[in-house]
Amino acid sequence: MLALILLLLAAPRVPSSDGEILERLHTTAEDPGLSDLRQKRAALSQHPEDLQLATSTARAYLERGSIEGDPRFTGRAQAALAPWWASADPPEPVLVLRAIIRQRSHDFAPAIADLLRALSIDAKDGQAWLTLSSVQAVSGDLESARKSCNHLFGLASHLTLVGCLASLNGDYRLFARLLESDGATSPGEAQWAQTLVAELAARAGEDPVAEAAFRRALSADAPSAYVLGSYADFLLDHQRPAEVITLLRDRTRVDPLLLRLALAEQQLRAPELAAHVAALRDRFAASRQRGDVVHRREEAIFELELEHDAKKALRLARDNFAVQHEPADVRILVEAARAAGDPAAAQPAL
Image 1: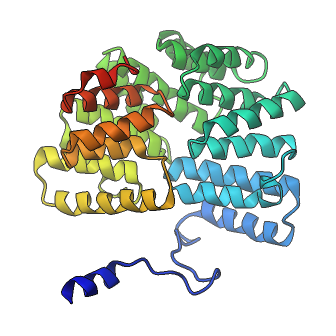
Image 2: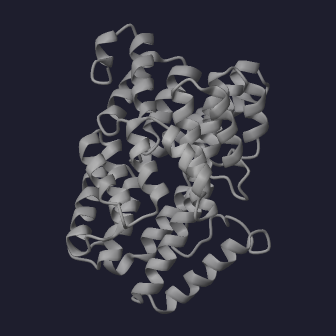
């Protein structure tokens, strides 16, 4: 009977109607940016087929999602494009935004198809070329990614062009000199550029350069969840878990950041570790139930480092590597294969 009661208590609750509010992200008083998003959403509800308003709203949600690391903003961006989402031939701006949304869902092949279609309409869309390069690189097609970067000449800032190529070549030096001499065109570009310098310098083993660039990136008014996670990885690799806890203790809503916080807590045997491991276990289970594979890499790390299940971690890492090939994807596949005593499984990454 007790087991039945616990099962009933654990069962997911189905909302009584589509209009039921489950959670509010913030209040307008807390964040003027969210107030602006609500105004856009309200206007769009009155004019859902206003293409300019819809694409502007979708871009704003995507930008906010990048800062917060919250996938719900990506869902709202998709909702803003609802009149054209399922169309085989939507307007060019919708194709690019749909591709970005699909990229964030790791639906890479349809994203590439959308971008190629968009570029057949407007070959001078710099955002489309930049996104295409990113998707091709993550998919492991580095030669095509370089060609897409080259198309940015004259369509994007010099910094963006050189950064696109630097991310593929792995050499930060020319890019860092350009950033120092020319500067960035916006706070968002500056944060991206400093993060790229930091990651490439860290990969080259130049830790002081990486540390300084990470700190410049974090000095932005709204450091993104991505830069927080990347810096946390740097700190964990250098056995500085206490700094990770200080950095992330208030960012537990974002699954990848909660994972890094738990990894730091494990190093320090912090009392909060058990609760955070349980929360991650529940979140990954919920993701699987939704069919969501966005955080498969993080789940592999979770299974290897926190659940200590090398075989399950290896299975997840292999599934993840079949889709994306970033350095972190290589690393977790190699580490899981070694821990599972199956070095041959790492061969695709090697």
